[in-house]
Structure formats: structure tokens, C-alpha cells
Image 1: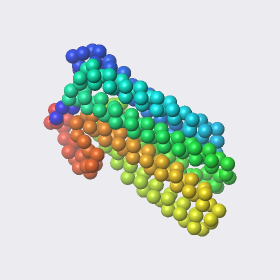
Image 2: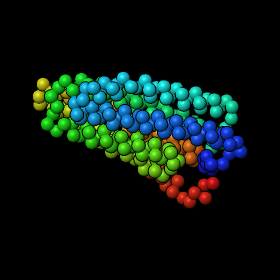
Image 3: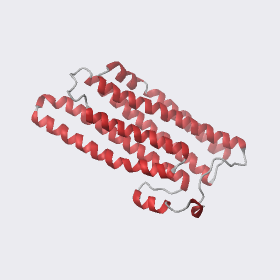
Image 4: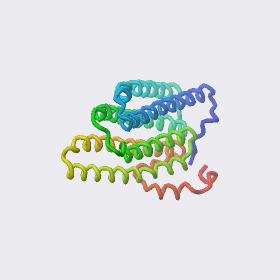
Length: 243
């Protein structure tokens, strides 16, 4: 199995092209991370201006996706990459799609935070939602870090976090249902919170997807419908044995 390696190419220009587009992905990822942090802060702090800012800056994420996608198309047309290099380009195209969708979810949270800012904040200041938000934000950060280092082991470790995100999501959903049954006055707020945690759960899914692309990029193995435990066992052997 050929392991992707960006350090050796017969064409120096090709190597520069790949490095440039990888850096663009990381810049896009950094901006998406910032959008997510701002969206969560807008909710927790009741900051309507910050929520509006997040909602109105999503166009920047879309622009980055288009730009990187065009650069990948140019590389495919001019360089005709093969094997590991082709996997890198394919993984990048898939990764920016998930980053754009994370941006969309952050935009949704921004809009909802803007609406919730008009209501009195609960005594716990959305503590559990904030915890879930921090969890998925860490997943996104770790997925990007694994992408930057082409670290399949770290990617798998991060992908496993999605199970805990799902559990937190379901717990908050159950609490919201209880609030609505106990106090009909809380229905509007509870519904808004349910939309937010749904957006956060989807962000966790996108972060997991990004981790799966790292494994594909490094080892050429599609693990989207494979048990992470089985993948871990398969990849635990010495790297030399897989070369």
C-alpha cells in the first residue's frame, strides 16, 4: 500500500502547488473554527451583534471553497497526479465541502443566537449547549490538525469522539422535551435550542468525515462504512509493513 508523501516529487512546481492548496485548506479551516467559536459565544453571552456577524460572514467561507476547488481542478488538469498525490487532491476537495457545511451550521447557530438574544437567558446560561459546542469545536480543530500532519492515527482518535457528541446531543434533546412538557412557556426557547444542538451534532459528523478523509489520503483506504475499531486494528501494524 502506497502511503502519501508530499515531500518527494519529480516536479518542484507540483510540490509547491500541493503545499499551497493544503495551506489554503488550513486557512479556510481556521476561519470556520473562528465562526463556530463566535456562534457559540453569541448564544452564551446573548450577543446579538456577534450572532449577526457570524450569520453575515458565511459568504467568505463559500468563497474560500470555490477558490480551493478551482485550484484543485487546475492541478488535476495540468499535473495529472497519480496514486498518493491524486488521493491528496480528492481528500482536499472532500474536506472543503465539509468545512463549507460546518460554516453553514455556524451560520444557522448565529441566526438562532440572534433570536435568543431577545429573550432572557436561562440561569445556567446554556451550560450544556456550551459544553457540546466546545466538544465539537475541539473535534474540528483536531481534525484539521490531523490533516495538516497527515496523521491517520490522530484522525481515528478524533473520529471516535463523534459517538460522545451524539450522546450529548440526545441528552440535551431529552431535556428540551421535558422542559416543554413541564412549562409550555419554554416551548419556543426549547425548540430553538434543539435546532442549535442539531447543528452542533452535524458539525461533529462533518469533523468525523474530515478525519476519514485523512485516513484515505494517507493509506488510500475508504473507511466511511467501516467500524473504527476494525480500522484501528488494521492500521496498528508497523508503517514499514504497509509500504
